[in-house]
Length: 167
Image (cartoon, rainbow, N blue to C red; front, side, top):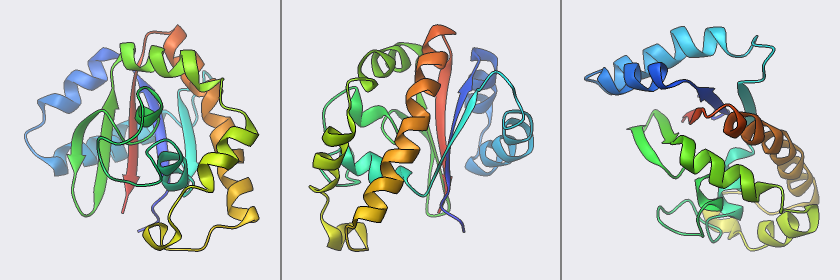
């Protein structure tokens, strides 16, 4: 699997559909067949890729780990935290409410490059699975910058946000 993460800003009807499915496989299929197919080409900017940087971005706001319940709200909700619609060995779909999206949007712009770099250097390389490096730090910052505006647009539109990644 590629482990490339994507954020999607969705309307309530999409969330209701995802919640109505009875199995993880149905939810995953809907994201792949319906949401992924329409959103990346959407000129409104309702999708934002994170490539593999999602892992480091989440760790930067989650006390250096992927462990749930760490870090401070709303920063720990930027990527993984929220309601898990799917969380298995193959796929993750986590959901943020419009209120959470608004909280994230109100604070995410506070994060400077220096602040993200400081947080990045707190990641445990053993848990991360690779050494920390200037290149990876820059890669993480570049992808982070792309989601700042995404969250602002999603909040202004009152949308829900899901984060998806195949593992």
